[in-house]
Image (cartoon, rainbow over all chains, first blue to last red):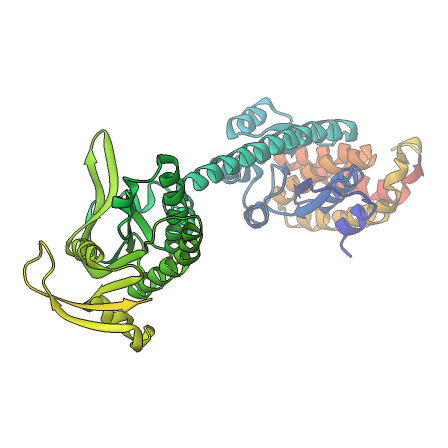
Length: 374
Length: 101
């Protein structure tokens, strides 16, 4: 056992307050260590400046008692480096030195030392100064804990708000990143998979239903759809009437974007089935979810005016998915050719019907379309 | 140094540390002698400075006082004074009587 370990052994009630003693004289280290350990502090030691800097970098203590005159890196140098580094600047440093001259004290103050002790060390003075800094340290730590707790609460509130508009996982990523995350970048052109979902014939039915009931039904419906989208980490770009636009591979890369879109479609239609049963049981309208899926290049970015911005997605894939959705029947997913090729192996062949090349409204040329009935 | 000057009172709670403390002081005498023989005044100054800082802390005021003499002697390069101080230090350590209170 080292001299220091033996000297500090009586400490029965060590707290988390850690003091690093830096002195090239082992007897001074042992003496100071004994006094502080009896106060319940955890004492560690280094015998030169370089060792102290390495020790502090690896495990920052709560307080440093620092000798000034040491071979190699002096106590002044150690103090200067600690106080110039934002990571260690707040660690209290007490210079313990035989230097009585005024100039050395001024130098220490200029370097940012928090207090001074003269050698030979008077034990009452040592304990008074260290305990004073310990109280300050504990107060600072409590304040920091409260600040952190408040910050966590604030971020959690923001995350919850965010998560109402985008998938919770995407919200977590954005909150974890500095700045505006994926929203800060300029508009860009990337390959996406767009999924449009719509409640077949519902718009017409709303004209005959009582307003409160329409809202309740839409809330039930969108709960199922958004849950499915978030489960597969889609980004919801738009919700209008009973229509929902979900993007994949955006704003973060998803190599399996088409599969995610397909699984989302399946979950939407499957999840809506019990909702529809309840509606029918209450005498509600017969309807169902129709979905269109297409892949291709699209422009992603913040679009709008200085007064209102929307993070949105524009392009042929979106238009195609919208057109497919318009023609999809209840519980039917219409998938454009390239997107279908990416999910072909995941779809039960007996559910698929190739519609061939279809001319979609507003689009030049024909698009290969596959119908999947669920 | 008088007989009374060889008596020190050490805090009871430091008693278990004193054997190592004295052992280190005896080693210090040897180091001082070697440094003086080689006229290494910088080392003598550092050793004196260290003695000055540690002696009183343990209750050995004479160690601090002799340390200051050695530090000053080393600064001025006064060999005779240093020889006398080191001899006085060795004598003090040989005769020191410790009481624990």
